[in-house]
Length: 532
Image 1: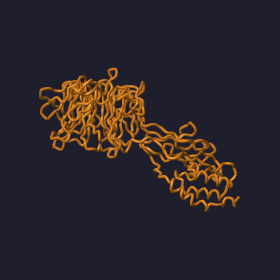
Image 2: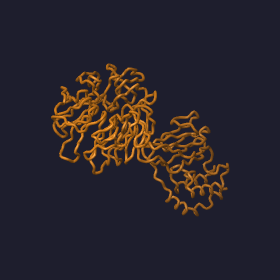
Image 3: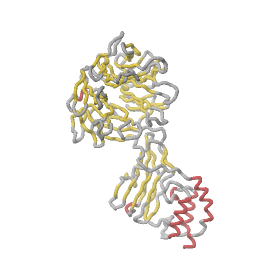
Image 4: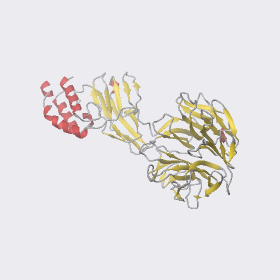
């Protein structure tokens, strides 16, 4: 049998070299690749989360900036129920207030008052506003019928620091860290304000960005001394956002308005409209059964990377441009898209988490009532469908040795999960004593193989487009050189390996490095020559 083992290896080296150059694959580093498209990071926070922002709870302390939610919250231990403000850190939800009327929660924001070294968390009920700097709350204003608060810099590169703006039933108020002043003047003032932003109405024109306030009477703009009407509406404009449809292209950002309005500016359509070249345009929302689009924001999935921004909208709706997008949708490259999760009830708030350490790039944060159960998660959008190159190879190894199997994934913002049969695997020591690692990565490793590790293994690769599943890879105990598993190491094993190798069969990736090359051949010949 030794003579059989050494037959013809040199004669086929040229064939292997050709195969190697054609099939050599780039391998991605095995590390903590991006998390799943919808990762639940907290659940027991309802019945109603109304608003969210980002906040650093301990200033210069060790905690990172984190997501803060306000509403009627039901937190798990140790915080307990009946909180109206809470933040999410590495240990879970931490309640920071149960002193207010949670049912009247309207808005939260982060504001650094002039002279302070630490940012304050600002909280508004329907009638009072408070700030938290340290461990206690202090009231700073009494604006009635509040719907929103926002921190904005109204003089750009000028000397004035940002101010906190409050949208109430009687208009807009500015808080400068000392006093609250109502912005009044002009022929018409905004009433019952739902959204306040800064926006450059004329793009590259001579006007500076202006403060815009949206509400029950449409959209108003503030020029520093008085209000003027930018657009009237039939119904309420509940949210404004600046959105750059062409990303790094030549066009300026445009103003997007959402709400329960049926028209805006005399020409815009129901629910979602965009101000383009001075005219309001219908933007694809199909108004169904009195539903509405309550919130909107611009989200850039990769920060300074090449991806274009997405316009994300949330509320109570079912169809946009003929696409079923229940309550949460995003617009990109000329079309509306649904998220991978089915949001079966009102999506109550959305925000951007760019600093909390969940990811290196900004991620969309969503809190919602999903049926009878709350949902709070992080969504990572992507541009490319999930996939992989070649199915995992599997293999035979003696008991006690180590075997790795894997794939080269394709796509972005991918999630991975290995299964044995129908059971998902968890990294760690198994009941039989072997150690499994990489269960949420493209490459699975089993160290100290035991008979209980034999079986069929497969991998799922997913992102917002869906999930793909590899063909199963067979893992068994035995002599690695017995390629055809007939319990005899002979020349047919050698021929079967060469046939598999020439045909790019995954089982010929003998060293499981996700490449068909000379090293697979050399490793097989070494095992084959050594015998068993």
